[in-house]
Every structure is written in structure tokens, then in C-alpha cells.
Length: 74
Image (cartoon, rainbow, N blue to C red; front, side):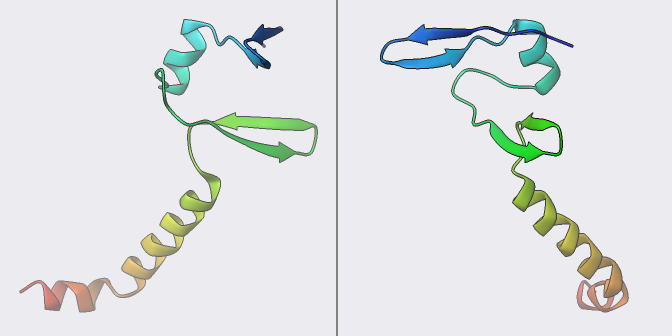
């Protein structure tokens, strides 16, 4: 577990993420981070949860119609 403190950044309040955490999340300056509510707090992720759901549906569709796509690829 990593403990972070809120800090004043201009007129806003923010968190400074340690470089080890940035590396683990594969984040760089300027990247977008998504915060989602969870049962016991919040989740911080570099991945858009709704995009992940859409990708999963697309993969399922491709799997279901793989023979058709194989024929179309010829």
C-alpha cells in the first residue's frame, strides 16, 4: 500500500504520484487517469473501464464469427 498526501497545486489540490507507481501503471506526464468508485473506495487506472467493456464485446463478436471473418479474408 502506498500513502499519498494531498498538496496545494496552484488554486487546486492534487496528488503527487511517486515514480515507482507511475512506472507500475505505465503512466507519463500528460496521460489521462480514470477514477471509478469501488465497494471500499476508488480505483485509479490508466484504462477507461467503458472502453475495456466495448473491447471485450468486440472480441466476443470476433470469436463468434471467426469462420465468417476467415472466409472474408480470403
